[in-house]
Image (cartoon, rainbow, N blue to C red; front, top):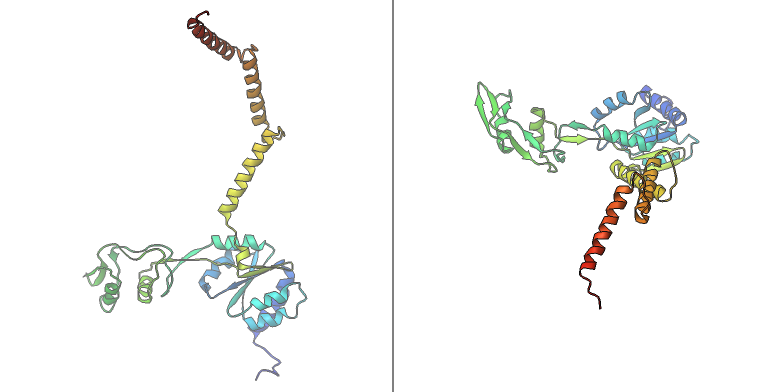
Length: 288
């Protein structure tokens, strides 16, 4: 039907042109699948990363056709990942840093039926402002105690119909939205990214920051300990090395009975202790 088409909708034409230009302009082309992402999450990200990341919602066929004309290393591998509803992000930022920043910009969203609650679903006692009617049945099915007062439904006491990690039923999800209760923490993660010809998969882009902080802290401590033992002087360890050397010199001086202002007290204490020990043994000595 469209084999002989010569004109295309303006939106698709503009998208095609963008997808031919942006991969050449930026070092990184990253892809996000929209199956687990809601469009409302993208707007604040577009504003937050303005000037650093260009975000383009795409049609998969348009993207594949645009990319197939490009002579960019690795772009053919990226084409295979462009299926269904996707968003492309173009940037000069490291894909690892981009993925970390995306992970930090999580937002609370209304749950949909079947979603897993990110927090305990707490429904507080309050005046809902909702007129009595069929809604009373929804509250009852959710196990939420209510009463009618002054022509509206009141929730009598705090309740927790779903605990963190539990599945939110469809009817409860609808009720929570009417009560303006958000229980799902939603974030965006890169599905794949292409950086100067090298493609990274989803699992390769995940960085456990706490784990790496711990590794760096441990490596730093081990390096400092080794440098002190080896007496390798740096600006960071010189005080520790001098302290260790001073302690060692003091111990040698005390052991050898070498008197100085710093050691005389310890030397005399050591001599007194030795004298007492000798005197004690002498008292119990009986000549043969």
